[in-house]
Image (cartoon, rainbow, N blue to C red; front, side, top):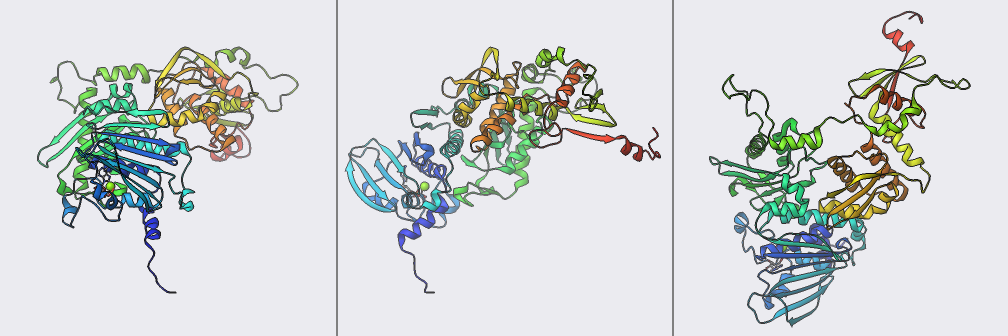
Length: 584
Ligand code: ADP
Ligand code: MG
């Protein structure tokens, strides 16, 4: 087969795929260019998750008329002229690949005016070809509009996700960039809706408020740890242990001013929390590290934002210590066992104000639940009706580990997982309620919850399904919702923190089609409404649970498919005890 050189446009389309995977990577490149141009404000407007259009407007340095076309040539960059520069580069992009890659796979209009120049320039490209370039009036700075991403590469277009998913990726990305640069004013809009906006006043806590909500910002703990000997510094904010999340998505790691993906770093952070953080739960954090430039390789892959440390252990240790010191200071935990009598009076763990409010809101033992109250009377364990004692109802022996009901049933001993069993009950009740049946209970006091921008975008999409399941919630201001009714499975006693966790689970679950999505929502509602493991239950509560569980369909498994019960037949027991025959 003859080898031939690909024509320029084909080559560019192929190369574009390395840089531009989805609308979020497009936004990343454009915003980084704006920051490199010294912009003090960057506005990002997207339509249909950026698939239809992305516009990024900055007030940075602008581009000379004579250089506008050049900016779209591959390997054209104003940020690097020789290989040595690579070592000391401070700017975010430097390979001169972004603009040509974007132009190769979309319809692009760039309008720009240099600071102080009399006129600006507009250039239009489509599929990598320049269609027109003209002089125009324009504000100082640069605006890039990118429409119809992958219009000419249908193969790539297929890999785009639904608009809400792409939008939440963009929201996460811009949130991270804004958290890394409190000195720049960011504004992200989707169609007519403002998703979030920062002021550029340089105060990180204000950015945290804009991105994750003011109540989150108010609870954050300041971090500050100086390792002078190694010239390393850790700053930023981390959440108190009780404000934890199901994923690491709310951890932002900024190294020398640049957002990096940092699994090693977040791992170290989690180690800093130690046992204060429940397993598989993660903090909200913005961690800013200042490290000697010689101690790391940035730009291992600029588009992927990875870094490599020459001495990873030193960096991890810095992070662990910083987090520990922060928590100790803020939560007033004992630093180390003290010699007796040294610290007057405080011989045990002391509880600081942070912990007190935490206990108040979250950790307080549950009051006996009224959840069963209505059912109680009818569910007294009565002798079964004469006519159908096919299998005798189970007899409750007690509770084991505050998690399992121990039950005698016929010839078997049952261990019932109280959470899984209750989850099954709630799930069936949700699924079996006839259409139009009332599925909700009204909250005595409506709850207002403020959610991170990335979740609320997704929640709004599933609002009709939530409504159908008994969640009556309305948007209330940009990222707040007012909740008036909750599904009966969740009951009226829910606490704000639990509700937060529930909404997070709903918002972050992968959207499934139609009926599957409905089931997914029911499972989440059932799981969050169900009695937790390690909760002491009153005898009456156990009896009611057992009775209802015995009368529900598919009782042996929870809706996620885990077993709700394990049983030991008397023969098995006799065998295990090496008893002969069936003698007791
Ligand atoms: P790189 O950022 O790697 O240099 P790009 O293709 O992203 O490559 O951009 C090419 C050049 O276009 C940049 O080096 C810069 O000179 C110019 N440029 C791009 N975007 C902007 C902007 N928003 N403001 C000013 N100059 C820009
Ligand atoms: Mg760039």
